[in-house]
Amino acid sequence: YVIIANWYSVEDAPAKAFADKEYTVNIFDIPAMMKIIRDEKIDGLFTAFTDSHLHIYEKLCAESGLPCFTQADLVDIMVDKALFKENCKAAGLPIIDEYDADKIAQDPDYASNIEYPVIIKPVDNSSARGISICHNASTLSAAINRGLEFSSSKKVIIEKYLRGEYCLADFMIQDGKAFFCASSDKPANDDDKN
Image 1 (tube, helix red, strand yellow):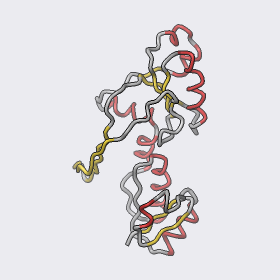
Image 2 (cartoon, one colour):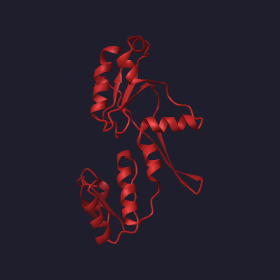
Image 3 (cartoon, one colour):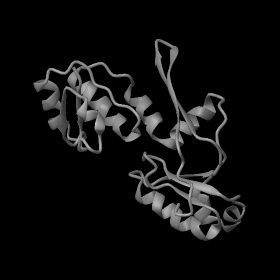
């Protein structure tokens, strides 16, 4: 028995049409979500694909006493792009070259050594909100400001922009074992509109 709760209409969330029951609700409204969990006697919660939903998912699991596929400290790593990169680096994984946004604002010599194109991303947002691709120095300041507008922590990450095929691979990890779930192509919106 599957219940889907989110703020989207059935037209924007077609899975709702296949669910046994659906709710249109703000998932960040903890009392409203807890009422649904209690009233429906829900015995398991699941979310995926949207980083910004992981914190509320973990909180709802904790408050309702339901199992959770992650932990609060791991959610922080998954959601914060800078923290994720730090953990990848500490684990010996290669990471994309990046530039320090604070140094760009303070040191003209540092800023003049940037190799374009670069991509600017808010460290704590998802679904490509606030992302810009800069092909030259004249658009960099505006792109940084745009990224900051979409960041609740008011931080951005500036990386060398790499072109290439974009694919996704989904895994679940349980008891130290990784299980491959799915793979897919993902079209990248790489036009002059940033």
